[in-house]
Length: 279
Image (tube, rainbow, N blue to C red):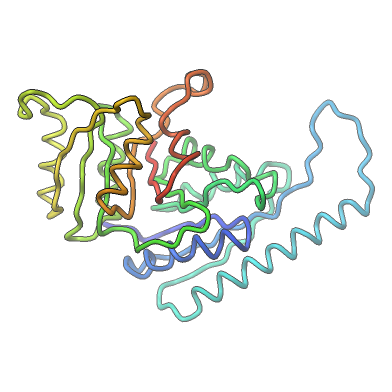
């Protein structure tokens, strides 16, 4: 049925400019309802810490929040005022929960979520690491866009990182929602190619599925050659001129990811292109 609701998480005026250059063309292409989502964060005191917060601190904090939200809304209106699709600027107070939790709650009603790469210089403290929370907890596909990204529209040339996992299967079918009707799609399996490609049944089945939908699909294999899987995906996407990388996300427990690291975290840390994460 396609994409009909896109939620774009707007945290700073700078990120809003970047995100809307990606989100507006997608909303236009799909005639989707575009929700510009912004939270007014709560000034949270951590449990177990006894402290008095002066009234002027609350006033200054709230004034800063209000100025940011007005600036973000101004950018949102600038990019969407002349568009025919339905647009909505949604301002939500975090109150007693974190901004991450508010994003997750609202994201569950969206077909697609778009977020900016974490920016330590400009992001407020509360929404930091929101990308991981929304990818893990919302149940929705999430496109994370590099800071300052100014590339082509998404959907014409896509790279899918494929493996035999539930998350990769979700990612593969999420591709169908964002890909143009005649898009070029590279299905990339990182690892040694089998001597007989016909023995790689699951990858061939996925390629055939895409072909039935009219996508121009190729299957490729690449060895890591000492590099991380994230590096291989980034390099292949650059060589192919891809406008989007798609991958399954966080297939391991949080403990495993924390101790050993994971491809999802590596892509979030070092991404050069928009990446769609499916969990």
